[in-house]
Picture 1 (tube, rainbow, N blue to C red):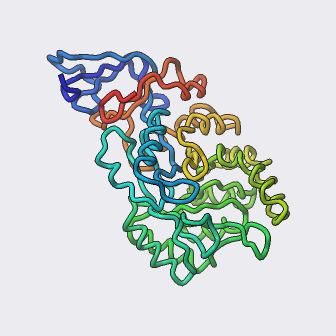
Picture 2: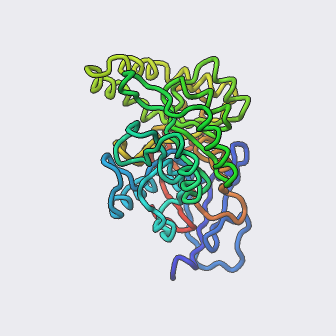
Picture 3: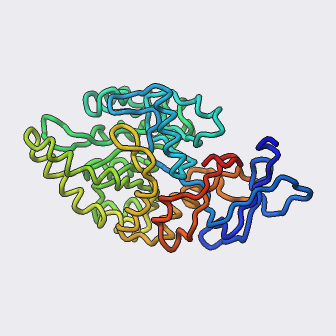
Length: 364
C-alpha cells in the first residue's frame, strides 16, 4: 500500500502548544487530525513526545565557504537539517536558486530572503550583491520580489580603513530601502555584529536583526518597544575567538572587539529576552558552519538563561507563528518530530529524534 493510504497514529504526548498537550494525533492524507479516522485499515503507530517540525530561522541552503554550491550539495545540506528535525527553514540569504526544493516533499520547507545585499567589498566574497547606497532601494525591491517575504541586508562588517566593525549604510539609505521592502510586502532583516548600526536600523523600521551581539542597555529597550526580533545564532558566535585569532595581526582593534562581543554573548541574549525582545532559533548553517545544529542552538539559548519552554517555542510554536506557518493545528500539514522523552524537561532530547514526519510521511 502506498504511503498516501497509510494512517499514522502518534500517541503518547503531542505538544501542540506550550500548554496544549494532547494524548494523540492522526495523520490522514498528509495532514493533522485529532479525530480518529473511521475505517482506517493500514494504521502505523509511533509513540513518544511529538513537537511541530523544528524551525531554523537563520540557515543558508545552497551556500558554501566560497559561494554557491551544486544542487547535490544543497540537497545534502537540506537532508542534514531534516535528519536533525528541522522541517522549516528561513534561508537568510543565498546566491543559489533553490526553488527546485519546493517540489521535493521529502525536503524541508524554505522561506527565502533572496540574496544578501552588502556594501561594496564589505562582506564575504561571492555571497552578496555588493552595491552602493544609491543602489540599495533598487536591489531591495529586486530581492523582495525574488524572496518569500523577506529581504536580507548586511548591516555592518569590518571597515578595513578603520580596522574595526562599522555600519555599512547611511541612515537615509536604510530608511528608503526598508520602506520599499514594506511597500512590496516583505520584511527586512540584517546581519549585525556590532553596536553602531542598530539604532538606525530599528528606527528605520527593520523587522529583525541577525546575531545582534552589539545590543546594549541603550538599544535593548528600543528593540522591545518596536517588537524587533533577534536571531542570536549562538553556535556561530562561538567561533568569534577563532576568527579574532586569525585576524589579530592585521586588525587588532577588530579582534579585540570580536572577543568582547563573544564574552558577553549570553548576557546580551538574556537581557534582550528579559526585556521582551522576541528571540528565535537560528544556526547560521551554510558557508563555513555545518548544517543540523538546531538542537545545539536551543541548548545555547538555555545556557544563556532563557527558560527551556521559551527556548523550545523559539524553534517550534513561536517561531512558526512568527513566520506565518502552522504548527500541529487541525488540518495543518503533518510536519512533526517525535522524541523519546519530554523536551520541556531537557532540551538536549532534541539532539536525538526518534521519528521525523514531513508532509505526513515518516522520512527518518
